[in-house]
Length: 86
Image (cartoon, rainbow, N blue to C red; front, side, top):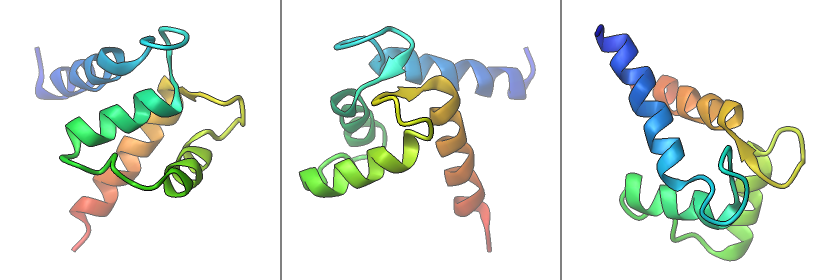
């Protein structure tokens, strides 16, 4: 399997690890997203409730109250771009 295919599988596996604990298995609730951030980004999920609400609102593009896999991928892609800019 190519490195790109492995990266795609890993992206989906991380999403699936946190999604569905509270709600639908194909979305992240605010609590699930906070757990993902806290564990996968070493402490980034420890924001105040207001900060988390604002961040969640930015990710929830369609306003349905959950973060879909597509919204999560957009977030990770944006982080990748930001982290590689010189």
